Amino acid sequence: MKCRVAGAILLFLATAAAAGEIRGTCDVRFLGTSTLHDFSGTVRSRPFAAPLSKDAAGKQVLPSVEVEFPVAEMKTGNDSRDGKMREMFESDRHPVIRAVARDVEADKARERMRMDPGEKIPLEVTLAIRGVERKVQATAGNWKEDGDRVAFDVEFPVSLGEFGLKAPTVFGFIRVGDRVVVKGTLALTVQGTH
Image 1 (tube, one colour):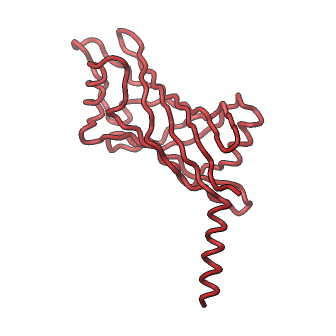
Image 2 (tube, helix red, strand yellow):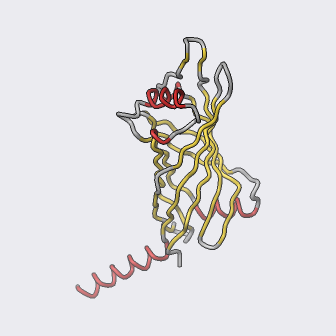
């Protein structure tokens, strides 16, 4: 019995080491419009980690990657606009925006982007904003790889209304547009993929 338990533990550890994990951050730039002028802002995710596993064919798969963005750290370069944005997100009650991707075929995505770095591949992301979850269709591309470090870009549109958010207004007539374009660059380190 002890040998079987020890063997199972060794098999689990060997599988975990072979599969590994990713660690990373995501720098985001968001682009919005208003009746006065367009604007942009930035935010960096909290550091995150996600396990890599292998499917039946031995290909690497990311079962789930969750990335959190602190609302209080979203900046547009205008303190008044930033304050209204935090109010809109109710940052005191909902301090983070979450983006989750599930069942990502990591090897497949990697091969497609390596073969054609300009290719944009589809990626479904579940976005959670102020307690509301919606699936958004993103694209990923611009793959860069250097040893165990990887970077690539993601992009997707977000409708504020779909998340129950009311776009801020200034003086009653300057209104932020409903659609915001989100562009992110993920910087990842892949560990333990022997």
